Length: 389
Image 1: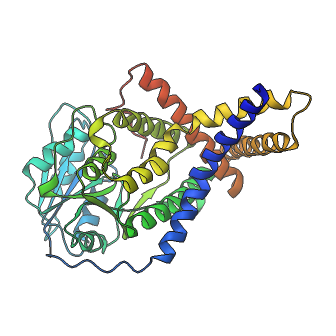
Image 2: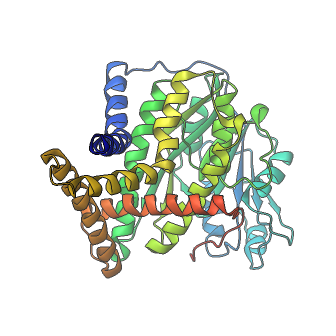
């Protein structure tokens, strides 16, 4: 009886992992292929876009970011830069730029209250029909605004997010950047399929837009502003779309430690967010299933990973363990070994796609586990140390 229960735990835990990483994207892809050809939405336009940039001590990149904003076609009706708490020359550099055709407002006050507070401040005075939120280190392709506003022709759409792409100079290329790039391509595929089938449940804060009429101030202490805007909109019966041609380019994380810290912060914020009732689309079963499959399971996956591995070890110690249990343990050990190998490749600067990808998955789950610990002890990540640029 005990043996059968342990074997069931192993199979259930491995099935959850397989479903999340492989089966859910595969099923989405098949359904998308069978139902491809979503008609182009018809609606009002063009839209006035207020581009809002949240920045903290970004003197190294802010001039390039604002020049990038001036190259967007169509141009935003205004650019609002909020650099609260910055004690470098971010505000001075921005105010000193001469960018014809760009209406720039710079907002700065000494105290730093976090990104969500900065977004709220800017949104309160924005005049656009669409609020487009960006980061100082996120650079857009010229056609990005047009790609985003096309999705808003559907009146049921409240939020639109674009695609995040990782850039690396060949001389600085690393296994961390390579794995990040693979992850974001994988994530973009899932979001595109979800979006084309009606609505996606995921967005990225570097290129995130919302209709002004649906904007609600982000509650204090919210870490994942992008997830909050997305999930609240879904819970209200509105839709969220992914615009694959709206592309944000961003440099890879400087090293694995900074990336791990970032993911720990995101996972912690996601866990706290999921503890609030207002973000759950309980009256939309299909959207709820997508949320559970895509986002909820991802942050809780360390639990079945650990439980499945421990149960598998216990089973194979019995003298009459089945061959299936031996195989499942070998598969888990092989995956763990690949992840550990990827860690050492990351330290040495060597690149190997499969170990790097396994390390990315392992690192993400360790970050999720640490995030659970943070939530249990009440640690907040509203303000965090940004990586050096």
